Length: 315
Picture 1: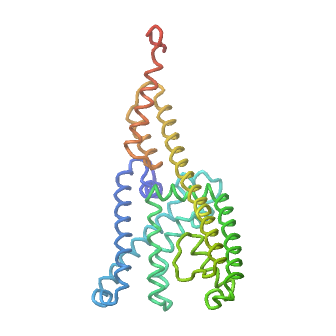
Picture 2: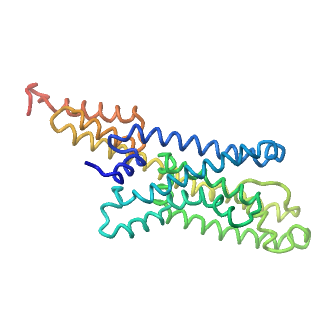
Picture 3: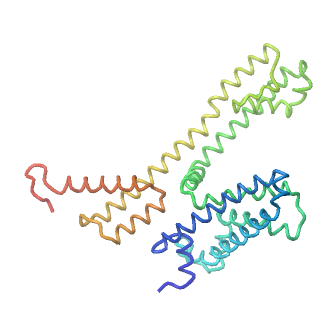
């Protein structure tokens, strides 16, 4: 018999027999977050902010109350989550580890601006932008966002190396265009920091056109930097695309292996189907992908169930 804290942990994570209820809670919170984002954007319109001031305030207080309750419940029940329950330490250290996790920090940032507003006077524009950080709470409920974050973590080393190279090229481009165009356009290329605006716009292939070289040598140099930047920008994009694809492949392999283990007797019972459904939700796979993996394993098992020469059952 699970106690209340264990039930709360399963409910918030949407695991086991609480998966359907957990899914309803996730949908409710996602809807509330999106309503908050829309409200914060509309509140920046002065006429709407004045006309619906009371409605915006009630929505803000209600949303913060719900987010605060969610935050406290997750903090209380985190010690019964699988990833923290396996740690050999006290409940206090488990909770401290949870508080330092990225998702817990995002949850705190979702309620912190409103709580601070009660004690400190804020610039409303700053507060509004800070409250927009609530959109990052969607990371908790979106498997695709979690997949992207995992790709960032896995490719952090190569990405840092790529951005370091881009920073070096940025400095070289700024110094080069400064030496070439400084005497002709002292108002636009009066210093290396000022030239960095042109270098940044060129290296990112944005090319605003507000600052351009006018000398023949400057234009040649700008063309070289533009051609070089096309390859530079593609490096981090290619790394992330490759890692994202690899993460999807790994998750499909994990699910396929789980199906293979469940099919040791040639069929799937209700408990095994429940386990596979939970794993599918955890990995963020669609039902079509899951059905394809199950069908593939069944076909593979049937193919090897009988001898291809005599047709007799092998086991």
